[in-house]
Image (cartoon, rainbow, N blue to C red; front, side):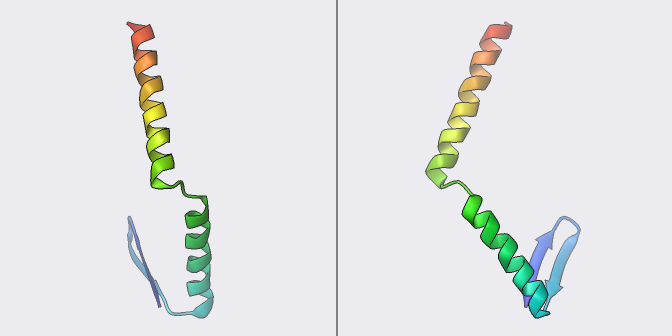
Length: 58
């Protein structure tokens, strides 16, 4: 059984194919997700670019 929370409510499935589809989707997300350290690096980079851009516009 799978339960997925969405903006529109919860989606439940007990059908093997549906469970497998959700499992594959989560595996795909997990394999492409950044590590916490990589995420922090990206966030710092974006903040730095935003600050530099703001400094040029004033």
